[in-house]
Image (cartoon, rainbow, N blue to C red):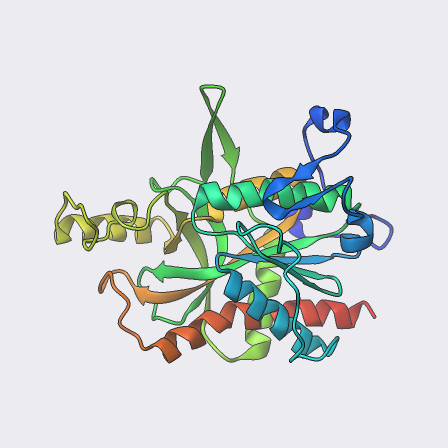
Length: 308
């Protein structure tokens, strides 16, 4: 079964993979940043039915997502209060309704990487199978109108290369950033079915920084000109990059290693070729931020209805 092509069969289930022999020797695997553990919580009972996971930076956004999902699935009172499963910590927030799990990941590669380590272990300990995961968020577009939703083909680094590099024991390890192409196409099909907003498919550049790393001119430090910025962004555009954010590379790499079908769905809040700062009203920007959850919500509802 090739998970990249999104092909699953009724007779084949895909487990969550962890590649760490040391875990077998742990009596209690403490998921510290979730305030959960294998000895203190019945993870299979709590999470064993999870089939869809959606992660995003803001705790507020992820609570809003689970409320939206509950509403469109008709699973519970959409005005009900959904408890934060990770209430024992202030690092991340987690919410669940039926087979859908919603988790915040903070901002940037280090924050989402910590969350993903513990999320992947949680799904593994809960014996989950055939899980599909989405990252929803915001981004800066390159040559796209604000409000455009981007479904990522491939995450690339600041040199426009499809790789994620991490230093382990003093050595640089390079990991693949492929995402599930079949899932990406399904999301594009869902956007056509919705017909509510423009959705674009292209590469997403993942950077280590919001300011200089993204060629902004409005940070505390800047050693380049407007012309330098425009040249860099044009080069990125010519390399197939259509938006910029700060989490997709490690998300893609870790999901691929664990066997998770993964997609990145981000809305663009501005066109970086035209400026660096957000000028839209709060209401307009809030409307834009709802678009990725509308698209992913449509996908989830469609698949749950199909499997009834």
